[in-house]
Image (cartoon, rainbow, N blue to C red; front, side):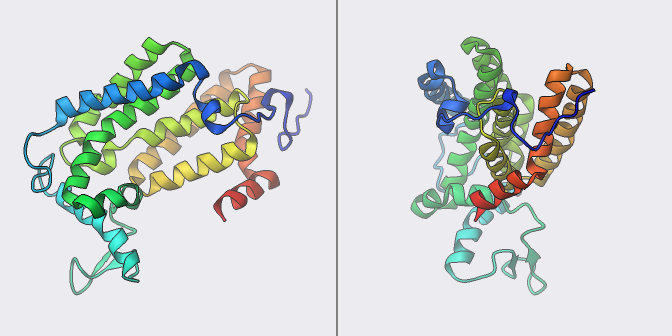
Length: 269
């Protein structure tokens, strides 16, 4: 049986000099991606939107949205006032609370930072809640169109993913669990790398950034993604042909190679 050096580029995983946007979305679907996002956004607004004042009312129920609105405001407030953002005594005084341990959604807080400053955390939370299903649906569309090369099939797949029963249930106030767009994008990175549409360094850097951003939204979804991803990877290794198995093994070992560590350090420094 031949021995493969999986730390070097193989012909099957050759480099590609195209831009990142061109790698992720086939040219004939780039304009359609923006159109499909707009359509998903209209659907989300019509299903989940409220006619009440978004500055003084919030979507969902219970106390979880109040905590998330507080967290949207906490991270920029702490950093702008020179406060340690990972610990606060503004809640559970005098003991305080570890913000790295609770669901404090720093990724989403910085995502809508300017919006929060402009209209306040309440309206920012509502706008983000309406956009989340559309973003999740669009990312699923991008993944599906890459796999199937069929616009209508991918549009249906995106709708099913972004407006599923799970997404609708989490719209009741669990913004951290409702934002699932990054899961599809991370899987899209894997698919594009397997098709040689991403260079090794770009693949490692984008995947690492995606996982870090996901950790700033929901540890539960991050853990589910890693566990299920490992299971699917193992199944593919068992079922794949020898040629495909070699490609999968190389992809799995790339982050651990000296080249992979150098790429990650270069993009994160």
